[in-house]
Image 1 (cartoon, rainbow, N blue to C red):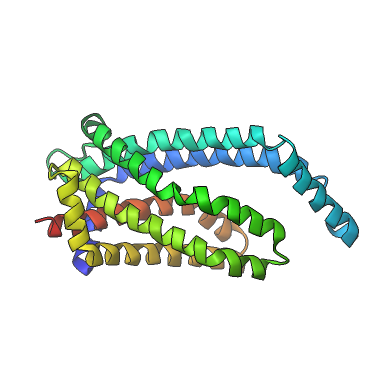
Image 2: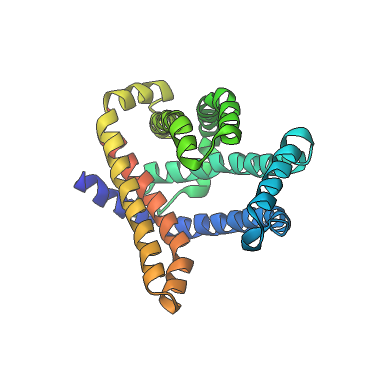
Length: 271
């Protein structure tokens, strides 16, 4: 695993300019998402009784909110807004993945990265696999989300909600992770020229090392996140501000490092 991490880091350093581009993309996306949520939540929270309200006024606020959400079309414009944002992100993501995956496969010391060429050459198979993955990953939501909403509205407290919905949410998350890893192997194969189905079989046969490097990288990312949060809470001030502003860039680096390490594992096991 150590060799794959080192090789993944070497590939990551070569793609530093792509990391900057992806960071700017995430920054713009985060800004629009934040402004959308802020425009929705702030007017609603202004009506919340807060610390000065009685228990009855808070309950009245929640009852009114439940009625307006379930019995009126108040939420429909917001649902369409978030559906549009999600569709836009899902439309852009395959192009970015195609460029990054192709560049990882064909980067050389002499020619450098091939991000733009990868978008032109590999976006069609990557987009097709991405759509299939999303459909399979979201399909359980047709059954789970209505039941989750029913559980949310009828649960007495957060503990009861977690006990009732937690196992199903965990199973759905595990299903999504399994699909992500298998389809990632298929996308690597499509870009490299091995074929999606052949790469799927290779991914199944070598699933443990492929999943192992993924878990290690996700663990490192989670550890960094907790470290940033802890340091920001302990040393509030300029240091915390610098850490908070730099974290999205560090997160982008970790994403590319994760994919590069996953690719190195797949490439070493593809035969």
